[in-house]
Every structure is written in C-alpha cells, then in structure tokens.
Length: 247
Image 1 (cartoon, rainbow, N blue to C red):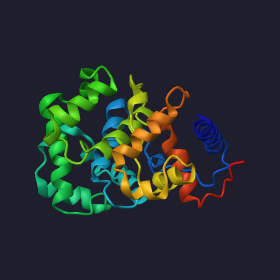
Image 2: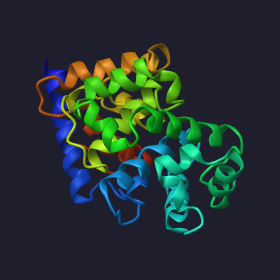
Image 3: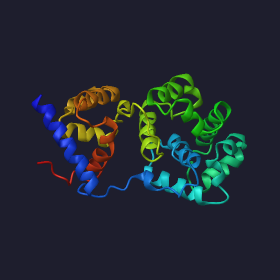
Image 4: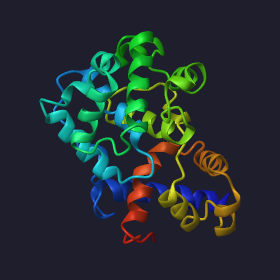
C-alpha cells in the first residue's frame, strides 16, 4: 500500500510538472494541426493519419498531415466521402506529396479502407461517434470487434486506445467511460514504469503490453487519475532524459 501511494504521489507530481513546463519540451506531435472549419474535419484529421502511425516519427507524421491539409491540391483527402470515392492513384499522389504516406501501397489501402468503412456505414466520422453515443465502451466494440477488418491498424489495441485519447483531447469528444482507455506501454512508457517501480526490469521483458497496462490500471484505481492521462507526462519525462527529478 505504501508503494502504491508513493507511485500515485509521483504521478501527480509528473502531471503538475507536465502542465507547468518542468518536464522540458512538451509540445505534442498532435499539436501540429490546422484551424478546423468544423468538427467533422477535426475528427477526420485526428483519425485517418493515426492509422499510418506505425514505427515512424510522430512529429514528422503530423507535420506531413498539416502540410497535406493546408495544400489545396491534397486537402480533399480529409473528406471521408472524397477519400472513399477516389481511385487509389489519386489518393497515392495526394498522400505521398508531403510524405504523409510513406508506403505507396499499404498506406493508401489503409486510408481508403477506413474511409470506405466510415462512408458506407455512417457517412461521416461525426455520425459514427453519434451512433456510439460518444461512449468509449461502444466505440471500442464498434471498431475493434464489429468492424475490425474495416479499420486496419486503427483497430489494434495500442493504436485504438491512443486514438481514443487523441479524439477525446484534441478531437473535443467528451468520451463517456474515458477512464477505461488503457495506457499504451511503448518504449518511453515502459522505461518510466520501471523507474516508478510499477514494474521491474525483468517484468518489462516478461510481461505483455496488456499486462503492463493492467498493472497501471490497478495502481491508479481510485486515485482520480485516468490511466491514459499519464501518457503525455511519462512520454515526455522519458523523452527528455528524466531531467525532472522526483523528490
């Protein structure tokens, strides 16, 4: 119990440090975005590029997304109907112009598949969210179970949870049951988990990502901190070489 209380205190300290700038550079990759004309464009912008965010620099991904969105020749791809109806060559030209897509076949197919799934079933992302009543449980069922094949990569547990965090934070969707969004233990989160003694170095190799996420959920239960809210503070704490010292 004493160990759990210390971890929770440290988590509160890291959240405060993140908010007041003590962690160092804390500009999120997703902070690179245009001035949105409406909620639909906002949700499309923070949805489709996420499906291309695999083993690549997130900052470069979102810089490319912004350039693509601001280019009159390529901005159409942030319209679900236009992306769903466009031929692959037209999409390929638009997605690769500013290097939003790095894989000229797979990334184009992923973008088109998700656009088609949304367009054929709900027409727009805003309507898809309306169907789920902006409830994380229902959204998870809809994307990771009922329509899993229609959302390549986005339906995977790691990216789905992080995407849910992004649309609730940057997409301005007040998700119900947001506390159920799991923290995604990438390299930075795992290193912080060891440093905070949430897991040992041995467990970092032995436990699955799901088990590490579950460990975080157990520790933060009743603390008032949603697990996913620890992602930015932990990510920057590790990325900035732990320059912030916990007392």
